[in-house]
Image 1 (tube, rainbow, N blue to C red):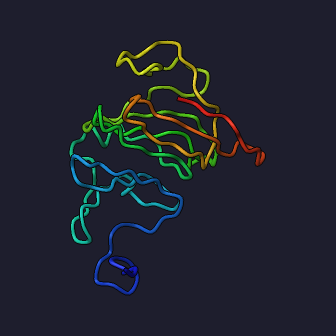
Image 2: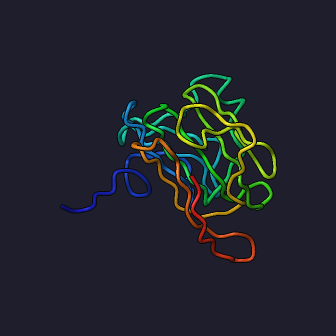
Length: 173
């Protein structure tokens, strides 16, 4: 097997605006790769890619567009197969270049910020399907590893880099 360039410079396909440090998650239910953000991105920061000739703005309503999180890069994006939602964590906000520990959820229609900084979070901390109030979360970081584990139905965040180039060895769920 060999690599084949499908879209981009030198092809007849222009997928979306050029970017670096974007995040991608696979939405199996809708058979699409979902891309959010990235450094240098234009207005198309939330797209769905179904094939080399089928890519669209993932927001299908004004409510989605109005609730989009601020653009960021070096962040994490995962798809929760059980709840059929995307989770977006951390990264560096493009407008200010500041690290963030925001946690956002996209339910297929709108985005909601679950927690940020020292604010109270509303997240399912033990996998029982009930959102617990007062949960804390990871500190602001970029380039962490994040994945969804379907057996426990938990999202996990590991490592990353904090301000000042300090690497983290923390594991959060």
